[in-house]
Length: 92
Figure 1 (cartoon, helix red, strand yellow):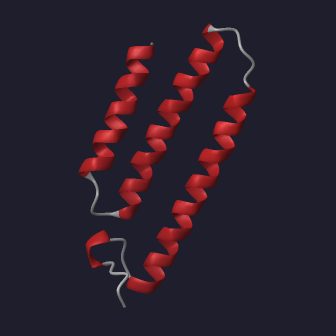
Figure 2: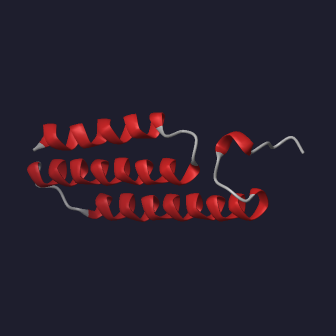
């Protein structure tokens, strides 16, 4: 099962690298990677008979990361009209 979740993590990273032109696709692949990491942490904590308190902290931080990414996406679409990274320039 750990190999399966590690494959999900690697697939999320590869899709993050390959879909670097659009911010929405980058955010979706980043969330996929975070979910794979969450499952890996849950399996590790379950195997070692630890408490699951750290998983709740990790889940709340990943929610904050997702909300921050979506707010940047909304701001970018309002200012530039699309989510294409190549049209974004911070020099103006």
